[in-house]
Image (spheres, rainbow, N blue to C red):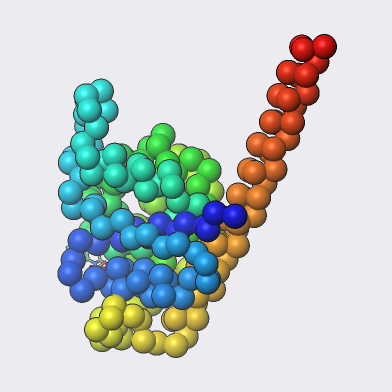
Length: 204
Ligand code: FNR
């Protein structure tokens, strides 16, 4: 069976980002056999403009959509800026509407170390994900507080309890994605069997 692919997307462009560190930690703690990709090109995406969909698609957008299409599941982690989703991350989500997130299993890591921190950004993310009919995996939507001094040189979160929270979230997301893929494969098999039966009946 093709290995499961997990796509990681950070909503922060900052070097030394806590959100990116949480995702690098998720990558290190992902179950064995899972292929992990990090979408690193959020900063290369042009401002969303539906006119650009008509002409040839900007290459970073095509890359984003290809990586989303190839992923069995997506894990995101984003800061909150001024009580809302960062503009650059919302831009990435706008480029994904109708493309790639439909029924895609998705989870998130809220790394804010402050009580109630970043909650509005995740409320907004949930609105967007509901709108695009993504498959939100609640067990993979967790608070995993990351203090800036609790990240090592390899971008790994060092706090064992937070690492365990991240490990469980990634595990739940991958498990859900595996079941979703099995159901999807089963359906396709059944459809093919129906097509074959119809074809045979026509031949008779
Ligand atoms: C913030 N931060 C923030 N946090 C929050 O919980 N609610 C908010 O409204 C804001 N607003 C905000 C505005 C601006 C301009 C900055 C620079 C920061 C804090 C921010 O989310 C926090 O520092 C994140 O940890 C940054 O993520 P990275 O870059 O470390 O991944």
